[in-house]
Structures are given as C-alpha cells and as structure tokens.
Image (cartoon, rainbow, N blue to C red; front, side):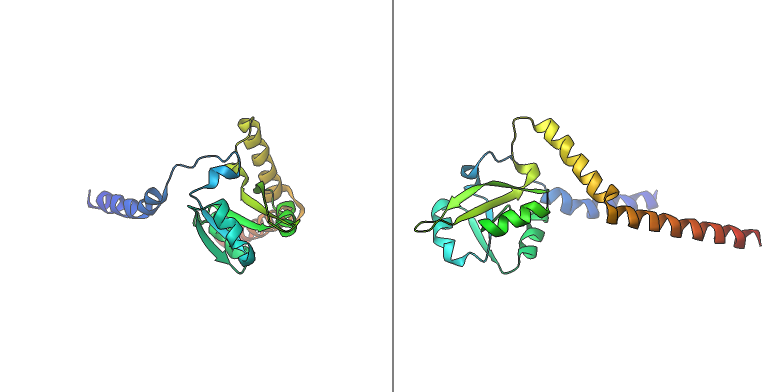
Length: 172
C-alpha cells in the first residue's frame, strides 16, 4: 500500500508540469488571428516597427539564431516566427512541419516578411485529410527515408547480434 502511495506521488509530480502547461490551442485562419500571440522575430530588428503596428498587443521576442526560434516554437514558448520572405521560403521547403500563414508587406520596399506557424495550427477546410497527410509525411520522413531506414536497420542488426551472443553465453 505504501508503494502505491509513492508511485502515485511520483506520477503526480511528473504529470503536474504537463497539466499546468496545457492550454487550448486555436487554429489560425490568417494573420489577423495573431493579435495576442507571442511572436519571434529573426534578424528583423529594422522591421520591428512594422510588426508592432501589425500586432500591437502581441509579445515580441528577438532571436539571433533561427534554430533557437524554432526550438522555442516546439517548446510552446513562442507561437509564431516572422522571418524575411526568402529565408522563410527556404526553411519551409526543408521542413513540412511548418507553414506560411501569410505575408506582411514592408513599407517603402518590395520585400515582405513571412509569418510561419506550425502546420497543425493552420485551419484548413478539410482538416481531417490534412492531418492524415501530415501523419503520412512524418511516417515517411521518420521511418522510411534513406537515412532513417539505415539507422533502424543498423539498430536491428546490432540487437540481433547481441541476442545471438547473449543466447550463446546463456547456454554456455
């Protein structure tokens, strides 16, 4: 009985941060849905005035490294990334987990800023099929792509070798 009590205490301590960190996520349809979100800006200090005018109530964080910005998005410390259009399109081409919600035009320039959010946070008309295609993309990328398959087969081979030698040692 005492062990069960300890297990329950340990589980509640481990689960408490997850429960406190949970918040209801709403899907975004366009840039106007981002009025009160936490926005990360990558190397766009000169565009901060435009961003502040577009999102007056949003909390704005500055990032020197794109990786830090996307790590914070994954950790739910930041909701949106705003990056110059060219770099944003390069990042989106490399990673299907993110999508462009829209663009912010920059005054007195032909350039635009790309507003990037997690693909799962963008509302679509056919949300169910979009979720299924995302799962298919992730399964392929994590299990069936060339590098992933090599790692999985290498791990399987190592496990098989350990199993055989362990069996031989157990019989001996």
